Image (cartoon, rainbow, N blue to C red; front, side, top):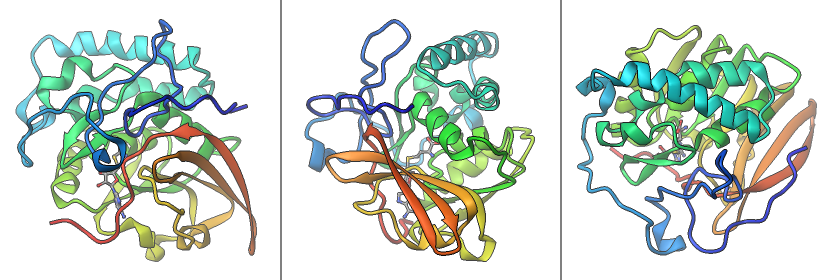
Length: 277
Ligand code: SAH
């Protein structure tokens, strides 16, 4: 399970699995818009003012509703082909309108298996990565309360809230926190999402323990304080590393014991300390 795959040569996308392939077998490389100091030139850069409104607030084009349902269906088919098997996760991915979480100009690409820019040099994660992380975190159990670090535009929190009753999500960039809030407020989600503006490297001690933690940005090391905020038996999934990153799965096996499993190479935006107004 979760066989490590060969990392891509050269700069790749963020919040993305470099070895992930789209359903037709083409490598799924696309957006990269941060980390560029480390990773070199960007495959493409959208000139996007920091406070640009996204599709949720601007209103999607009239024909996108029906199209997007078809595209989501196709995305779920592709996720199955890429090895996602958890029906709760597939249903959740099929239910969340990803095109409402990106800028209107990118809405037609919203269901590609790619990370896309969301402003502030950050990205919305690649669908496969979102599905894979949630599947690994929630395997064999239905967590009742989870924590997401790095909410970005709110997409993964919305996916989690399809089958997790309580989702706490933290974002350090104020403009993205506000964007996530708008996106999440616009949807009727089965679960509740509590969004916080702050530095998720400290976790969210006042709401701990969590029955799952998903970290959507890569630290050189996963902050250890997060391990203590896991309930016994729960799992945390996070990318770790800088230029070479791997997805790590941490399971709390007892009050003072954790088991660490290394999964595949990935490329995420960096986990940064503090907040950005
Ligand atoms: N979960 C998002 C992915 C967003 S990209 C999705 O659904 O697509 C990762 C996000 O992590 C960025 O928005 C970045 O600002 C945020 N981030 C980085 N360091 C953080 C920190 N210490 N605390 C909270 N958020 C952080």
